[in-house]
Length: 395
Image (cartoon, rainbow, N blue to C red; front, side, top):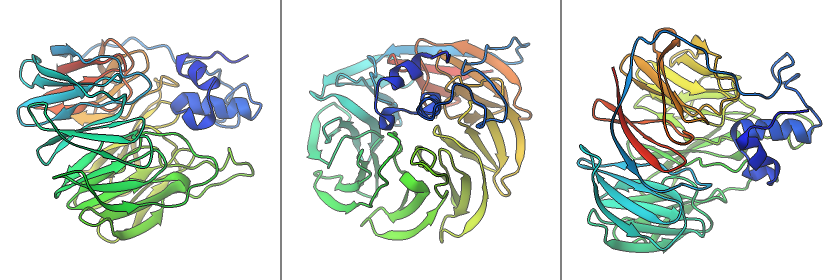
């Protein structure tokens, strides 16, 4: 008998392509006739999230301000930062501008669509996407600048750079829209396997190049201006005898700096490549659907079991690993100062010591934390599934 946590209960009643994280992992086990994690992790463990351990705090989270955006629903919605404002959206279509320093609501508009992707900001625009493929761009006063359409639902944050708004749709296509009027400039599309994981993977832009991961473990570098392919490589090759076993999709955004780009696949590998040429640097067998953070010499990630891992960016060697958040639907981590910060399905935000990964601080917020925090000034910005937006510091 398997104990089903909330993500798995939702997943069990849906098609596989609508599952993610521990829920996806458990669904794979259920569909495969397994009731334990034996064969996946090398020992029998019930699929029960780990209880949080007590520790002596060496740091403390402080809430600077808190705002209510409205529930995200089934979507993974993220806030967008500009020089003086924070923009957030709710699943039912509300787009809100918040004063960055105080958390005061400046305006709220009803987009008239069910928001499933966003919020993106850049090129003087604030951009959201809908479950029906609508892309809406607003100015900083909340006025609609233009509305466009892509081929299917928008599940990730639209990105804007070099006069182009890049939108990835649920069917795997990537469209480049003119930031001035929303007209399509280019379209990138590729064939996909018969069975794929529904994900919120988008694109990562660095120095005029958009990096995107796909089903089947493919990683592609596209020129932002015209969508031309600069290079393509395989992060992970599907393995196994069944379609379930052969799922090896990149379900999170790649991470990049001026030197290299890295991506990680579910049931696959993490790998880093030369950013300019796409030549391989190193790879390791680690599975994740949550994503990573690349900061200077280090790569931080949450794996499929909920562990948080610090890797050497140059070699891929493990610096430390915290395994005390097993099956807690651990989100992607973010590194800030002396700490690595990561959230979980119960709304706990954990601060880990960057030196060894041990717990340093913890606070509970309202609602599950599904994505990596964002840096804002000398602190962090976190949006929960329930639509609560927090500005926090850790000291």
